[in-house]
Length: 378
Ligand SMILES: *Cc1c(COP(=O)(O)O)cnc(C)c1O
View 1 (tube, helix red, strand yellow):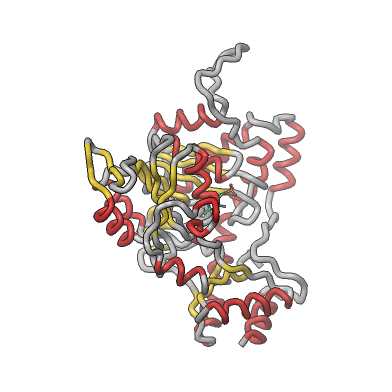
View 2 (tube, rainbow, N blue to C red):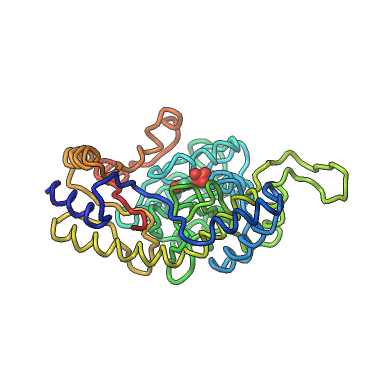
């Protein structure tokens, strides 16, 4: 089995050399825009590329406002502040996610609660969410109180895993019933839609990442999406050291952050953005080939679900058990094909093991079986 898979992936990428899990492709105006940016001397936190990019991403996603940041984690951090998450609050998220999701919650001093994911979408399970809230919380003065800790559950952060949309409409409805704000971690899902609407536009506010391994990259970068004009204004203020506009004086009206995306990164990103649709198209072709191949191998390939359009950022398969997974990882990696297991569950890390969680049945099952396979544009 492994020999056939290795042969297939090498043929897909038409190489015997190392095949990465995901690699950026610079085929467009990257060098032209970077040169233009350098020539202008506006390489830092002010410039036309940042503004242009913000306009484009707002237009593309259908979000009213977009605020560019230095990375996806900072976008998530600010998004949680905009959702009014404070120290001592609690925030529900999924255990099966990248560390940044939980860290952004911790930066505020709030505590994550880790719930299970849906076995099909790999995103936060709306059933697990409903069950947890029914059994563990009560509403007092329009606030959702955790019976165990007496603390307020202020927000919920679902994540669209590997670019596959979670059942975000159901999650939003449940959270509404419990007076919980939804902050979408859409870091991986630029170009993914749920019921025809772009991911990251369902919650109050959301974050997308443009790290080097994402579908398009700014080197490092992120963006905050929101439809709320006041939140957008506040996002810009908080990401730019809360400086009051003034011809020369330095007045800052709160303790804030230096999180603005530099113009040089935005120049790269704008060129990448122009190629997004072609990347999406090519990734769709790649995933279709994988899907057909793995079907013959009787291996479960994770594909787009009903009502969803996935960007197929990172392809994944689910193997029969941990032993098979470990063998697969070993065989592919020694053969120059980069494959990786899914993240260790956040609730199992020492830094988060004291956090409240549910049984995480699906998460534990998936943790032992998921493998990500090369997904970069060929
Ligand atoms: C990449 C990623 C982030 C963080 O983005 P950075 O730009 O690397 O800070 C957050 N959440 C998830 C799920 C991610 O995959």
